[in-house]
Image 1 (tube, one colour):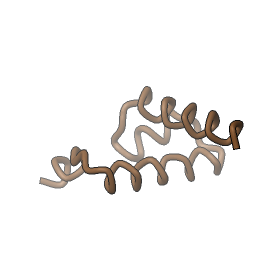
Image 2 (cartoon, rainbow, N blue to C red):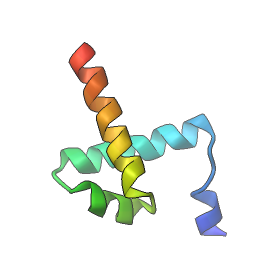
Image 3 (cartoon, rainbow, N blue to C red):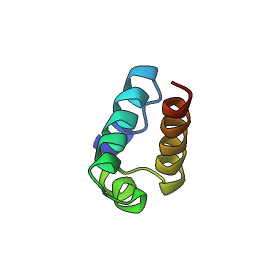
Image 4 (cartoon, rainbow, N blue to C red):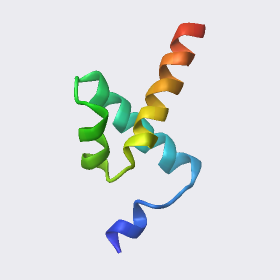
Length: 59
């Protein structure tokens, strides 16, 4: 049941999970570790990291 709640794809849930991942990355954790801690694919975490970096360069 708990694992199923992690698979919710609502914008609010995705935004929260992305923020958690980015904060952990900012603390210096590697994407592989962040993915494991948050039950995400490493590719998802790396993708979010790229999106965030791209947005910050444009700002």
